[in-house]
Length: 359
Image (cartoon, rainbow, N blue to C red; front, top):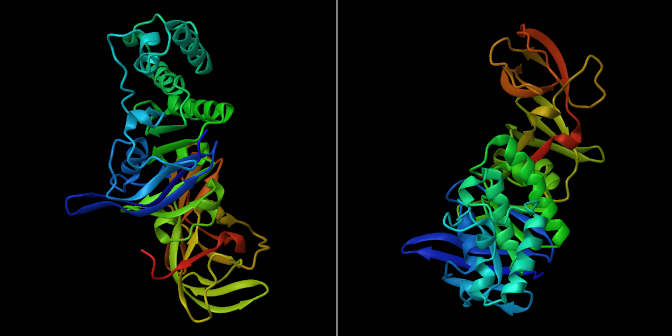
């Protein structure tokens, strides 16, 4: 499978710049998720790699080959669309074999490769079925088989699960990752669903307004965001403005509206004493305890109003030093919560500092 390298890619539509000097590299066999809100440019980047959008500037390479000017049909990429794009007048096997027929592959080889692709997507024996007799999940598998059967240099997926119900989306996440990793496919996958990205990706590229804000492994993106935009887009967080009061072996000390806090030192961002920063604390990192061991101890009130029971977790609203915070409680009861004073702690490693000038 080919490594994909995008360098300084620019896409403009009249006076609108959709991609602004975007660069990203995807290793052979890697599964990269392009994550961001609607209109951020992620689908345009995917379609540029596929050859459906001509860039205004920059380059796209598959391994060492420059494919920037090569038409889509000559790039040998597999594409799975949001709508599946299956032909209703064809059977499952005819849909899967379409790309091979266009390439004038011998009929006997088409039959063999189609069945192999269907078996790999757990659709073996479905070849003669009409498309309109399949469920949404089965149609998704057929779309994947059609992309895989041509033995693509890379696989491109544009929000392939958005039309499925929640339960099916979860099972198909696992299926797509299994397929991609077992076949060693270089895969670029577009989504706006944070949970989907965290569950599937080797790495995530978070996009906003035609730029890539941060690239990293799922845990790195979630636990160590480098900007407010990434921290707020990936999951929920409590954001506070603060000032650095000192740096020592214990970490970085800050003065915040909820009191003095200590953050673990982070090589990606080392603010100087006296500088203004943002503090990000994930709701699940606020732990209720009568005997705190962390240097970050917060005393406040659990509010009776604003509590949401969500099954495996409950979202609780706190007041600490006059500041509203959100906390997640694992395995909660469904009973109403009475207002009460409580003590909380947060580990220094869970206090994330972000640049103050970042949007």
